[in-house]
Length: 332
Ligand code: TYM
Image (tube, rainbow, N blue to C red):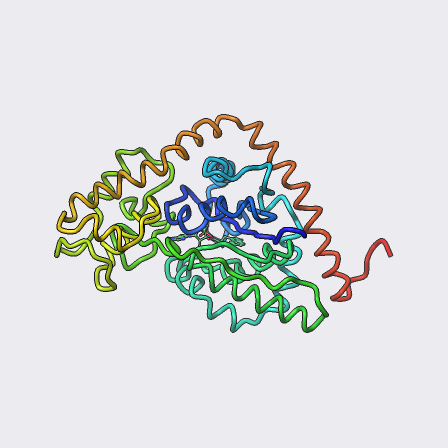
């Protein structure tokens, strides 16, 4: 039987964080053996906020190197850059004509980003979830492994797929989000009510995959917590609960085991242990990245072959869609 298809992506905007890793990429790596796996670098999504062109190019390649350093195997999965496959933008136009203004207005990420980028609320920021739906639906994905913040977008992709199938007969697989039990929403270290984000202006808030061991350890030592000094998971202790989640993701231990391990040992000791555990978990990723980023020819070769395979698969769906909506084929 054919394997089920998974698809996911990350934007190449700066340095990926442990939120991206535990919420998404680690799970892609765990799933790649059992699924027909497709992962892309979402550079088209990245330009919804202003980018320095040379930086964007650099970050696109660096994101691919990080995917590989985290353990994605180009022999097992299809890896490519979104802008290399023109079908994504083409399908996005067709699907935007199947998506309601009201639906897009309700997207919480759009509302958040509009608040943060009040000077640049461009139309791309608004239609961003339609492009994401196109990424998913073009490859007939069954499952989309993402963090919690992307769940609403995957649900919209489902709604769009169902609507298109109803209006034009069965065309798209209706995808399911795959949200990990642990690590689906890693919070900021300095403001633990907020999601950890690679675009946060305060570098103390986020732990980057590519920073030194010392920096990571220091950030955990300074992480904001309450003052009762008791390592216990609780909704009214967001800072310490976030650290427990991170420690659990890094070590595989359960919340209960962690609470027992640090019973009456205090926050200072716990924060150091979390920092050490995260660094141990990331040390292989960091070392492999340094090797890979020097091998530009190898990385470009993966992207060239990825683009060819992705184009072939994407065009199959796009041709079907064009036929169903009534576009005249030039080859007819
Ligand atoms: P992006 O680049 O913001 O994030 C990449 C992945 O990391 C997850 N993530 C987190 N998980 C847990 N805790 C956090 N603090 C955290 N921050 C980020 C995100 O949920 C995501 O899974 N629009 C997408 C990229 C995209 C995409 C797609 C995803 C483009 N096309 C198609 C899936 C399918 C985005 O901006 O992710």
